[in-house]
Image (cartoon, rainbow, N blue to C red; front, side, top):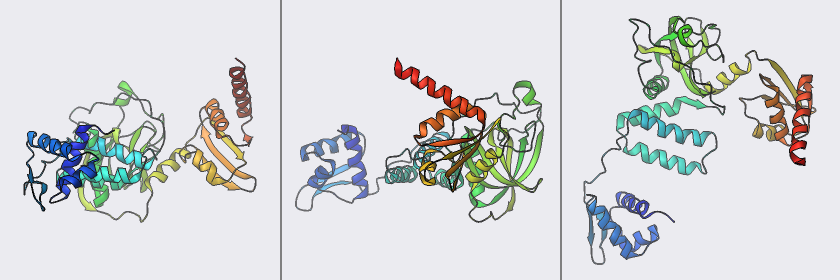
Length: 352
């Protein structure tokens, strides 16, 4: 049963949406009796919200003309946190219904200050999310002596909003960026230094055209065309020292998929084990069980070929065992041994 406070707020929202409502209409919408509606009206009045009631055939409840709730006082960080939660729930399937998510976003946006609402809309339009576990936290480098710290000293929310706005508007950016030890790709896991070693990593200047923001592997990345290398690269936000618009504008490639770009980069990185498995099922069924960030899934004559690179074979054995589908290991042979060990462990657990 809804809490009385939630019904009071629901009554306020109904009165904001309608010029006038009868006690019977409110009672029906709130699923209470008219006496309770009168009590709710008194509660709103005690909170300083001017609800008036009129008797007679054309009577009812209404808010005094001109009354509006003040803007929702969220900081940029708080607003970004709320909106990212809603977006993530919608895009990775955690929400029970997209209509509820859409309604919640609309309500929050409606009461935010206009400037912040516009920046959040730009962020929403430019970001992508993947399903992947968080990366281990690392010590972050302090800005070097005399080094401007507009990005490093800003909140992650402010940086996300700035990059989202530039991406949506097609504004070119000048980055001061702390490169990794092996700056072949900005998405390579494990290429970070830490402590004093990371502080000595060079800071380079990059002029980039931002194409999209992606959250992957527990980190945020800006996917952008790097004018220095003339390549599309992925830049970690936690390595950005400063971010400045250059004043120039650009046009992004049509239908560019920033998430697909990042996941392809990860898939191409060197890992300890090359895994190939044939699964006896249709490709749609396998894709529902295995995210694109984990493995490449393709349809072949024998069924479905699963290909990926992994650091841990025990984890791969657990994933395959959990599919509930018949499969054949093509490579490596060591994966077969891990599957046997996993099966033996299950047998021991079942026999206890």
